[in-house]
Length: 486
Image 1 (cartoon, rainbow, N blue to C red):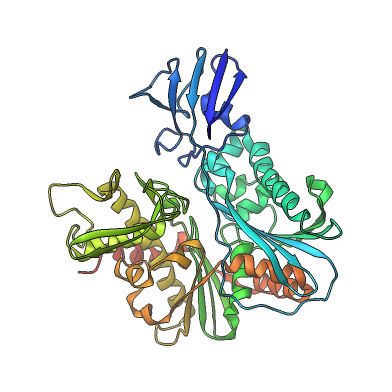
Image 2: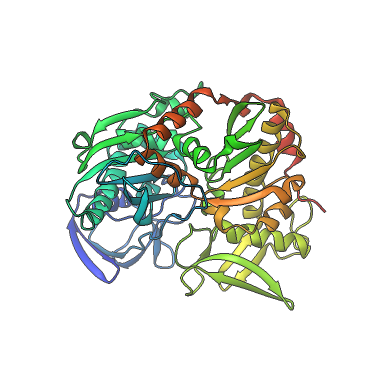
């Protein structure tokens, strides 16, 4: 059977077998489609336009590729996911070992990848960029991807991130005088690091949540088909507390006072320094802040609404890239929900107060009742995690000096609105500081300094991990923080 695929004004033709899943076939051909529910037909993000032919389940000229089976000749248009990851940071620099040459730092996020080309002798970042993690086609969160790996797609998940890394290295090689990448330093959550190395991640996804490795790994780049002389995988604390949060704490200098770092993404990782000790925990916020499980949700890509305000009775918003609004990302969602609370569109329980069950921001872009419920689950998990971690460490709100908010969401977030919706405890409203991508900053430091690697290993070794899944206090706080304050 013949399948014509139109993407970005380019048409390609393929021969395929009848009975193949359309999404899987497109992924095998290198197309990057969002399937944030893991291909279960729930998120609606993988739809394609049917130009010719017919698919079961087709509606209004579109079909969800994850549920479609190729049954005859057809012509379709696909809408590939594009966008970038956050590379900005307000974190501090560090000393270097003075090594000659260039290296590359990589932060593997569940949603995005961030790369930096670094001169090893000075620690200066010569170039940097971010892209969406193409593994998003296998699910929005780590559990979806672990399930995909268990269903025979482990090699595809590894090759997805390695392929993007090869492309980044190839780009950077053009800027390196001697054409050599001395070292590639990599951080990420524990699952992402397992996929990168091709390790079995099943133990992370099931009780008692054990990782195959947490320690620092050093291997030759050739073992992964990468043109870096050495690959350095940075250390993690636990199955759900990865190297990204470890080196993030290093970059933010959390241990220079009574400070808390909260790296917010699909998994909210938190690192607290108090009483001469380090305490670590994580909360399963889910992919809501990354645009998944939100009807008009999207990542921080072109076309995403990233801020929402009200002026003179009119809703105003900004769009990434300045074009037509196509959806709403996490920062925009926080603003929208805060406005809904302030204007009484929803009550303290999150229920819509009027007959209309959608809050429209732009033409075709809205927040639904189901979106508000998913948002409540996510924001309560973060807030409850912060409260319980401070409680376990015996740290009062007054005693905490800084709450560093890391990650892409935190960098673009209106912190006042985040407090309004209960993402952060109101008692800490004056102690919030957005610090950007501390994970990439910390990876750059470890790339250039053996002492920084040793410090990261010390954090990973000495941090006491608090398992909130077994905490009655967390469940109490989780339920208590679900509502919005009146």
